[in-house]
Structure formats: C-alpha cells, structure tokens
Image 1 (cartoon, helix red, strand yellow):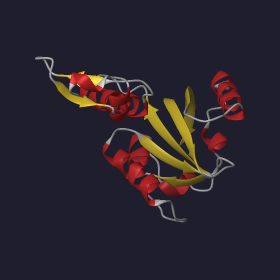
Image 2 (tube, rainbow, N blue to C red):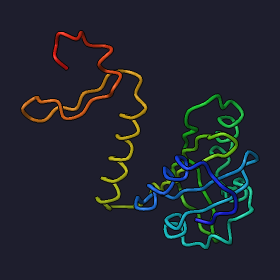
Image 3 (cartoon, rainbow, N blue to C red):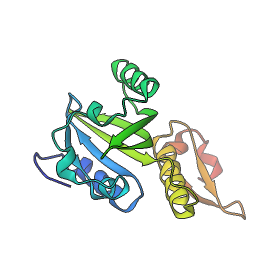
Amino acid sequence: MTTNQPLNQPFYCACLEYELLPIGLLILDELLKILRVNQRFCEIFACEETQLLGLFLEEIFSPKDRKGISQFYTKISQYDGGFVDLQITFNINEKDYYVRFRAIKNENLWIAYIENTLIANDITHEFLVAQERWENIFKNSEGGIIILDSQKRILEYRTDLKSLIPSETGL
C-alpha cells in the first residue's frame, strides 16, 4: 500500500489485516478519489496500483451497470454512518468484474472493501470471507452474543453481555 499521507495508527493496522484475505482494499478521500490500493486488490483485478491512484472511484465503474451506479450514488448521498454495502460492476483494464463493494467513513477518509463475487468453486475464499463477515457481525453487534462449544461451554462473548445477564449467573 502506498503511503502518500498518514493514517491514524489503529485505522492503518485494521487495513493491513486485509492483506491476507481475498478482499481488495481501497482508501479514498472525501471526494472518492483513490489514494491507496492494496496489493491484494491488484492481484484480484489484474491491475497495477499506479493505474488507479488519483482516479475517482466512479471512473472504474462499468458504464454497463447503470443500476449499480444509481444505487451507489443513492447510498452515498444518504450516508449517515455504518457501511455502504452494494453489488456493482467495476471495469478495470477493459474487463468487467461484478463485485461486492463495502465502504465506511473514518474521519475524512473512506475505506472500501472489494470482493470479486464471481470467484467460482474457491472454498478457501468462501471460508475466509465467511469468517471475516462473522467477525464483523460479532464485533459490531449491539446485542449479546455468546459462542458455545459442543458441550455448551462459553468460548467467547461480547463484553457488553455482562450488563444483560444478572451477576448471580456467574458469568
């Protein structure tokens, strides 16, 4: 990932976690101009980082996907926090890729996670994506979540769960 401008440390570390997953990562400014592209994105979409740096995100949308583009602008214009999540078609090096686009705003930057949704029969990809999604659900849950093993012992739980359960339960 290019380091043109500094990111806050926790945000940058969170970005690096995605280097091992089959998920591309884009860092965008407030105007949705591409500032950084991770290596995984370049591997998935057969491109070079230098091809994308400085482009506005809309420049890599496929003009054939008018519905996806319309959904994108609707979701961005109505953004009030959380993830922007949609399916859209990217066009990179004159090739269309149907992707899952998820983006979240952090201070004055956007971090976008891009998954090529048409990787067929790749069980490792499916497992890693499912695991990453579950971790996001678990970490971002507002309610109580408990993970039990086969013998119904608690393996993991959200820290706020203690506030929902009476103290006499021994949790």
